[in-house]
Length: 315
Image (cartoon, rainbow, N blue to C red; front, side, top):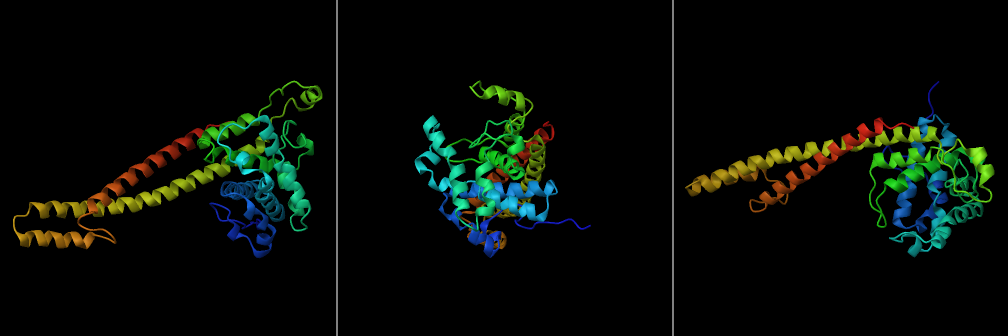
């Protein structure tokens, strides 16, 4: 039997322009989000979609789950920007306000006939299997599968993405955090915690099976990023070789003792010059190519190191 494939996104990222007209109309509410939150919603939807593929979910569920993921942070439209984008640590009061984006988003969806089917995205994406999440403090048996998937995708992108209010955390370090959150931990004591401890002693916040699937998706992304970086390195190497030829003729030109010789090598230089390159600026262009090459080469080395670490991770 031919496997169903949900071609809802390209292989690198989900963009609003990939959606059909009906879905675009359904997701117009996202236009009110700030650029960071909207990009985050796109990333989480892309990761969720690919996780569903690895989980062999049906086409219909994959589509449903992906749109739920796209909508998961819609409630942040009504969170004050000074709180949402605060550069420092949130106060308890501010964190309580942030947490309301789940119920705000749910209510927004429920009031819109087109968005109502996807209300689970906003409502459940911060619930934790062990009951320590919000807004309802649900446990595994009460958290829909789509909520569990979106939580893992959301947590990964929220941690790994660099924003103006936090420093960058590496890919493997981010995955380590998610793995740690999939392990059981004793909750902080409270008046209603005893029953929760007994019922959820073997559960962490994240579904470990879904974290394993996320790791596969992340590895795909890293290999793809290496491939893109390598393509650019190939381009840089070609231009470095071209600039080396220009430099060779330039050196011969300045060493020439007659004007005829100088012009001879100058004409050879011009053969290899490209748009906006001149005899006067090619040294600067050459240095730019070499610097870019070293940066991309280091990036590839770092990504391969990340892969080595990721492959050793145990969930």
